[in-house]
Image (cartoon, rainbow, N blue to C red):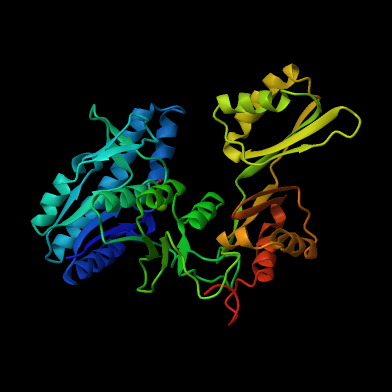
Length: 412
Ligand code: ASP
Ligand code: MG
């Protein structure tokens, strides 16, 4: 008997009709002779709504109480789903993260899983029940409820699939899988059949909102294959896995974009050792994540300018921190531009192919899009451009690399 872990995202279980539909799919899975463990997210926008209400009470609620609150969203889904399954005549039991034995550290709102005690789940499974676990949550050794960070129910599913040695881990969502580009922007974006953890990690960190990066890390570490698919159809989705063998050699797997960023520049800083260390040391201390960094070379004048990008939400903290170090590094000005975005291409094939970067740049040049910053890694190239050009850029790059649905082109 195979063991299947299925995770259902918030849109898949928003409202009674969708819950009933998911219940039927789960029962079908069981009737095919499988043991089934289900992980659920909070319905629809529940988590956002709860956060909003808390903030109306106080702008800085205690993180412990936030977790106490947010964990209720998933708990609600698990109970609803168990009821729907009962109504169809099958046995099911809903469990919170704590009841399951998902033990985490004490980092409220962003806890790390320490260990999972599988006894409770195994006992319920051996009683022939469908086990429904509230995702995104755990419990500390002191029995405080914790949550695993936004999007954390993906992580619950992957972690459970790993400790239970599940035969399959399916993540049901509102899209049919992972695409070569955002289908809302690129009409001929193509669903990718198989993608490596590495590529998926990059795509997820670069703005493709299919699964949270942390869950891919864990999947990679423990070798859990993840099948991302739609809860609204029976279509096969995308398998995220270690080895991807391809019919033909593919250089670029997908195009991603991220608008949630700001470019900050420090102008006229002296060109001497220790300056960058001061700037980024101060930001590091404030836990600001810096993405791209560019330092223009000082030609003769003895001064540089240093630009970098941060997430939009970190702008305030970044500017405050920069004001503080400004004196120390004798910089003249601090300016920022929040009208920028990042477009990126990802593909393991880049390791063995040259000319990929220039092809991307020429796609942008042909559309008259100016590149403000560039960064590259082994399997990705990113460019910062004007935010208003994002859609045009994504389409142009997608076309240039032949990623679309046109027959005989792109990846198989
Ligand atoms: N409900 C949580 C969130 O919205 C966790 C999840 O959906 O995975 O972030
Ligand atoms: Mg989610």
